[in-house]
Structure formats: structure tokens, C-alpha cells
Image (cartoon, each protein chain N blue to C red):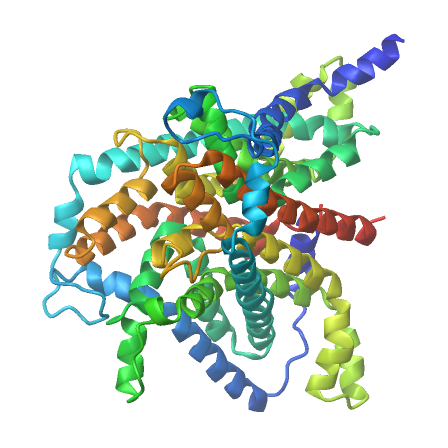
Length: 290
Length: 291
């Protein structure tokens, strides 16, 4: 769907038929009402994090305090889980990138009977509900004695996002003109050398998008590490925040909100980076048609 | 012969990806179908060496009153929150954005996307607080002098469906924004000249032109919603008394709470099959769209 993204970029300059200013006011008002509904649940998160005595209610904190943030910013509570999240997400993204680039290269460059069935098979893989696969994966991990192993979890998480990563990478690679490599081939460079020295540098930005996209998904993933990583020392923030909620839930809503915000900031920042660079439809690049 | 070999060798770089997919995706799926015929347990003797029990899990599953309930709730959840909720709201927002002032559209777009980009566990907490007894929704209803039910207890499905609409609408909105941008403006202009009203233009020109995107979007949000676990687990954990136990929650509860991996995988197999049917339909749709 880079095609669609490109198309949308192309047509952005062409102003769509606009109803007169008369029609704009109701559209503005309706949109603002919808937007307010979407913001409301998030408001609680922000207010509660600065409110030392926060409960479920949304209220503007009487006196703004950073107590909640101070309370959760301890090595055991915040930094270790965030570090684990970092290892898990960066590892997942790295495995994805390597496997996806390698797989995308022949798919993008050489015609073969194998290509289309493979790509559709891979796409079919994305369709399977991962939550349904978790019970059998757990069983499999028990039998292979891989439970509570960070590398095994990384490889599994990488596989769940791999189909999407392959599609996105192939689309970005298709956009690099083949003529440059042909010159290199004539000069005797192998396919892999051409990939490394010509194709990859030219699709840097696309690789960045794939990496960040996978990273965001892995960072936000709760269910996979919840099932596969058992010891507290290994658990990423998504899981530790859940146990935190379970143990102190009744009392520490402010701290929960503060923790949530600190944990969300990295992905929000990454999203902004990508959305700025590649248009807001970036995330759909792999999801929609090839 | 060597040419053929060389052609084969070109495909070598695909091997790591294929290995990963076989080991971690195809493997578990096949293992699931096999394990669903055993009495594999979470702990104890049968965890390491499960025994073959044949169709017992499936017999139990299809006589279990929980299965029709859970299937029904899953259909309600997917139909209500994805096919109706996210899809229609996403389309509405995308259409409104074309008419609204640019800064308004940008701000509202950010608000909608924010709920989607947040880590799912954080979104689930926010939704939990919003719908809880003394949460924001009841504060608003109270302010308007309306009743304040305990949403998560009395209307758990309504709460998780609304929460899923809130969480997932951004995807449909982005799809439809991209699709509407691709509708050539001269077509709608021509219709405008012919005096077609706004609704007629939408029904007879715009929607038919983006029908490919509509179909794709419906498939993808169905598959995404089918797999939603965290939102339900944090908000209601399937309760009260199974009133919001969708299939992923049922599979999890049977496998990990009651320790019956064999039975849990039988539930999971049903869910995988449903996903596979939709997935196959989606692939077909794509192939037809792109000969």
C-alpha cells in the first residue's frame, strides 16, 4: 500500500471538493464532539498521575504534585521493567529487520513461481489470531523447556510481526530502482553485496519505519510476555504494570497513572517520529494490499 | 541444471524467515490441533507426558454451555464494536474531516490516533477507570442528572464494546482517509454539477468507489477484534460470571486458570479455525482485487 500512501501524498495538493463555509461549521462541531469523547478517558490518566490522592474519578488535582512519579521511579518498579521492555522490543525489531530484509530481497528482485504463494501464505499468517496461538505456544515452550527464556520470547514475538515486516520491507524495496543494482551485477558484485552496498542505504528510511513499527508493537504487547515470561526479573513494563495494578490497585491509582505515562512516552515519541516522516498512514503500509 | 540450481540458490535468503514462521507460527498451530486431543495439563504429571484422549475435549467442548455463550459474545463483540462501531465511526470521521477546517481535523485526528497508539495495557487501564462505578462516565451522567449504573458489573459487554470502539477506530479512520484521498475530485465535481445531493453523492459515487477499502478494512478489523484479549481481561476478566467471556478469554481461563491445557487448546483451535476462514476470505479478496 505504499502505492496508496504515495497516491494520497500526490493528491494532497489537490484540494478535495469542499462544501461551502456554511457546511463547515456543523462538520467542525461534530468532529470536536467526537474528539472530546476520545480524549475523555485519557484525561483521567493525566490528572490522576499528578494527584497524590487519585481514585477512579477524573478531577483536576487540587495541588499538582510529582509524588506519584517519585514513588514509581525506583529501579525495581520502573527501570528494570523498562529495560526489559527495551531488550525485548529492540531484540524483536532487530530479528525482524534481518529476516525481513533477507526474505524481501529475492521476493522483490527475482521473478519466481514461489513468490506469490509465499507472500500470500505469509499474509495468511498475519490473519491468525495471536491470542489463540498463545495457549499452544505455552504448551510448546513447556515441552521445549523454553519457558521464561528471553531469547525464545524475542524470536516468537519477532515471528508474530514478521509477516507484516516482510510485506512492508518488500514494498519499500520495490521502490528502489533495479537499474542501480544491475550496474553492480555487471561489475561482478554478488546479489548480497548489491543488497548491502546499494539497496539498503537507499531504503534507510523505510528500514527505520519497519524497525519502529515492530518496536512499537513489541513495546505495547502485553499478552505474549504475560504468558511466556514468568520471573519478575525478566518481565517487561507491560506485565509488571499489571501485577502492580493487581497488588496495589485499590490504593495506588495515581502511581498506576504515573507509571502508565512513563511507560507510554517512548512509543508516543516514536510514533510521532514516523508519522512526521512517512505520513500518518505509514502503519497501514503492510496491512493493506501489497 | 546449474542455471536451475543458481535460480534456486537465489531463494536462500528467504530461509531464515521461513524457519521462524515454521517453528513459531505453523508449529504451534499444528501442535494445537494435536494437543487438543490430549489431556495435557498446566502442571503435574500430565504436563510433561500428556495422554491421548481422542475427541474427549471436543465432546466436552460442544456440550459445554459456555461455548455457545462465548461464541455468541464473540460475535456480538466483533459485530458491535468492529463492524458497526469502528467501521462506521471511522468512516464518519474520515468524511467529516474532508469538510471540516484543517486544524480541527488535525487535532481530532490526533485524539483518535492517541487511543490507538498507546500500549494496550495502558488503554485498558484508562478504559477500566472510565467505566468503573465512580469513573468519568458516571461523573458525566451524574452531572446530567442521569442514572449511574455500575457499567463493568451490570453491562460488561456494553463497556468493553465501547472501549474497543474507542481503542480501535483510528485504524478504520486512517484507512478511509487514505481511500477518500484517492477518489478523484472530478468525479464528485461532476456529480455536484448534476445536482446530486450530499447523501446521494456519498451513496452512489463515493462509497462504491472505495468499496475495495471497505471490504479490506472490514476483514482486518474483524481479525483484530477477534483476537482482543487484554482489553477484556483488564476491564472485566470475562466476568461477572462469564457475562463477557469472549473466545480468547475462555481459552486463556481454561488453560491457565483451570490448568487444562488440552481443553484450552481445543477452544483455541476453534478460534484459530474461525480466524483461518476469515483470513482465507481476506486473501481471496486481495487476489481478486489485484489480478
